[in-house]
Length: 611
Image 1 (cartoon, rainbow, N blue to C red):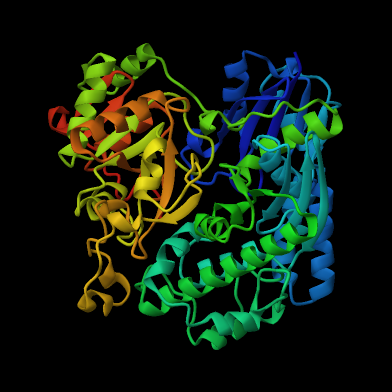
Image 2: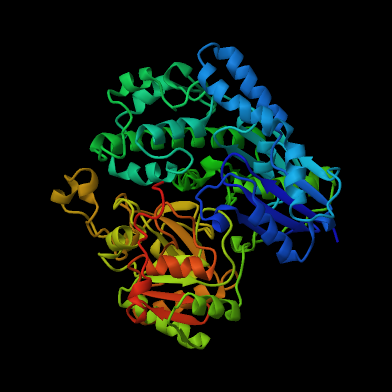
C-alpha cells in the first residue's frame, strides 16, 4: 500500500495530511495541538497525529511532499527588492537572515525535522516539492465530485502566482493562466483588513462580516487602486501599497485617498466609515470574482467550477458566483487556505507525478472534512476525571434527546463528537450550538461565550432535506462556504423606521423566524447536514426539529476569540469552564456548568491574543 505525507508550513496555518493509495485518511492543522492560532511552525504534532492514525513510522512512508518551492519564493523576494530598490531595504534586510539560515535550504531543514519523528529515517530522497498554486488547485479538483472542472485559485501570493486558472480532467490538472505578484486579490483584501484595524491573515472574515453594515460608497476610490479589466484580470497601483517593500500593508498615499490613518484597534472603535470601507472592498472583490468566473466559463465552456486559495473562504463572493448561475456546479475545498496546501501537494504527487487512476466520488472525497483526531469514550472519561470534571454518562438516545431539550430552552452547548474538522470551520464535530429562534442568542454567544465583537454573524446548520424551505439555495453546502438569503416566507419585513437605521444599530432587529443566524442583509452562511456525513449531528438537529418544528440550529466554532478550535477533551473542558457555556456534551458525557467545582473556573477572556 502506497503512502504519501503532505506538509504545509512556515507561512501560516501549518498542517499535515496522509494519503493511502490516494485516499485521504487524516489531516490536521498544527494550531489545534499547540493552541497557537494560525501556527506557521513546522507541524510536528500534526505529522505525529497523521502517522499514529495510520499506524506507520515515518521511515515506512513512501513519499513526503512540501506544498511549495522555496527557491522560487526566494527569487520573488530578490526580484521584488531589485525592482523597488532602495525603497524595500528595511523589509528585505529583515527577511534575509531567516531565508539564508533556514528557508532557502528547506530540504535540509525538513530532513532534520523529519528525523525527530523516527531515528530510522535515513535519506531525504523521498522528499518532493510541489508548486504553491498547483497544491491549491489539486486540493480543490481531485477531491471534488467532478470528472472535469475549471479550477480558480486566488490568495495572497505563492511563489509568484496570486491567481491561477487550471483545467482538471480525471487525473490531469494543467495551470493555464496566472496573475503574478504584486498584483493580488488576496493582498488587496488584506490591505483593507489591515486598514480597518484587523489582523492580516486572520481578520479577513471579520471584514466580510462587517460589510453588510455599510454601503459601498468607496467603490470608485478603490477603483483608483486597482485597474480591473472586463475579463476580471487586474493590476494594483503599487503607489498605494507597502507590502512589497515595507512592513505595513498600505502607504500614506492610500491613507490620503480615503482620508484616515489605519484604525488602531486598541484605541479606536469601529465607525460607519469602517463599515462602508468593508462594504466597498467586499463589493469590488465580488465583482472581480464574478468577472473572472464569467470570462473563464466563456473561454473554456466547462460547466463545473472548483475554488481554492484564501479568497475561496470568502463565502459571500462564492454565494454571488452561484447566484449568477455562471456555472452549473460549484465545489469549494473546505481547507481552502494554506493548510489545504498539504493535502493538495500530496494529491498532485499521487495523480500528476505518479499518473494514478482517479475514482470519482459523487459526493466528494473529503469525508465531510472530519479528518482530525477522535477520542474513545474511555479516553474522554479519563481526561475529564483527571481535570476534576463532574459528568453524567448517558446512552446515545438520551444524549440526543437531552441536548435538543437544552437547545430548545436557549442553553448554549459545547458539542464535541467524533473526528475534528480540517479547515477553519467547525462543522458539528467541535462546535458551540444554540437555538436560532432566540433573539438573544447571537448577542449572548458573541459577548458571553466567544468574547468577540457583537456584529459577528453565526451560521445555521440545517437538515439537507429542509434547505429550500428556509433558504434561497438549492445545492448542498456541507462546508459552510456558501452564503444565501433566508427564504422570503421566513423573513420579517423591516419597518420604515428600522430601515432608516445605520451601521451597528441594525444589529438587534428581528429579521426572520431564525434571528440568531440571519445577518443584517437577510443572508446566512449555510451548512447542510446529512446522516451519511455526521449521524450524531444529524440526529440532534432532527430531534430539535421534532420538538420545535425548526430544522436549524446555530453552529459556531468551539473556541473563544483568538483561540484555535478545541481539539482534545481537555481543550473542550477548559473552554467550557472559561466561558458562560451552560452544558458540555462530549462523547456520551454531559456536563452541567452549575454542577462543576467553581474553583477550577478559568479566566478565558484574556487568555488568548485578540485576532
